[in-house]
Length: 467
Image (tube, rainbow, N blue to C red; front, top):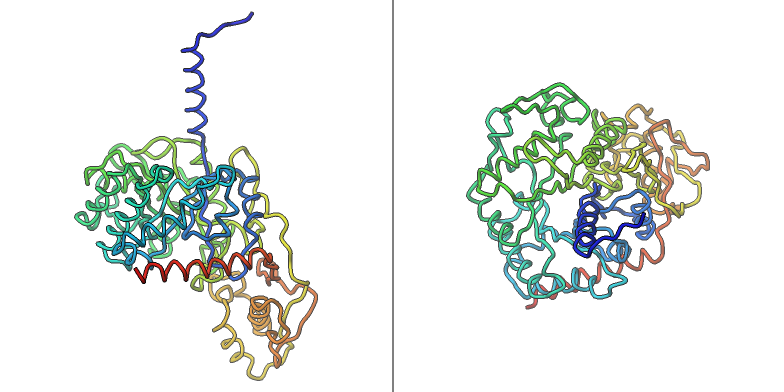
């Protein structure tokens, strides 16, 4: 039987479909770029699309990443480094230049448009930037965005550490900001532009800093109520921290301010609790929580969160900070994370490796320990120490790990394999979970864009200094 719908009914159904579509569960991920050998950005974007990642949070405005994201329909949060906030705060001209170069430029061409939704002003900036500089930078960037029609709807936000809130006896309902007067100023700024509050939540760090922290409380899959608060049972730290932020916002007079979790995840190396099993357990729980749309006891509904992070970053400080990626440096997945729609992670495609060569110890022993120590001053040897995936190696094997790390970092240059203690082999010397890297080839276009990024950064810095 043919059913005829009048115009108003048809319009209502279309609006309903749009609302349902726009409220679907979305998984975001942090894309950091502190790497010596970046993956080809277009290949990474292909991987993001295949794995149903629909949101990306950046810590800068890396041109190679933004060019690759153009036309992908992936929502983007770009970032302003903390080091730029003082200048942006003191100069409206600098803020306009920054917006023009890093936001407006990527919105000009409809078919190659980058879907920039947010500008993150700093990253946990109150650790090392004056409050008035943070406030001034937000005001100037906001004014620069408001000046143009195409950027007016982009929101400004500030990613904070969860350490900015506290509570009585760890009860979320008593949450408050540690520095309420300072935060009131920032919250008023965010509220004026209807922008969200962004917070990074890392139960892993809580477990590292506090030996009495119950490890199971860090994960989403427990059922024991570690905290009970006004009829709400908290079985995991994420919910408890999130709701402490909810309560702090309410206490400050902003009970309905949207909240974004800017980063949450689990590292896989260089700590006793940092391993692929725990990382999979945490991130799988996070994905399920996002998919369920249940939210938290004090803020039910859809959760807007970004997994921290996409790939390991070898230019971060040594230790577990280099190992938060759900993918290895070469774009291979670390564990079988199942994403929305019951699909397992797919690797980054089209990755090219350098020849199958590794630098290992030649078994000379006199002075070997000193040479290991000297090499480890130049490369990351943290997996060799307690909690690391390679801490079981013999002295000779430890030397091989250090020598090979230096060899691969320097693109397998012959001179970078220790001429006195090293030799080049063609058999992979990896031991189980202790992986000896084989370097990837950086795409020539990627190298050109890296050079352009440096030149663009220098130009922008000079333009902000000489105004």
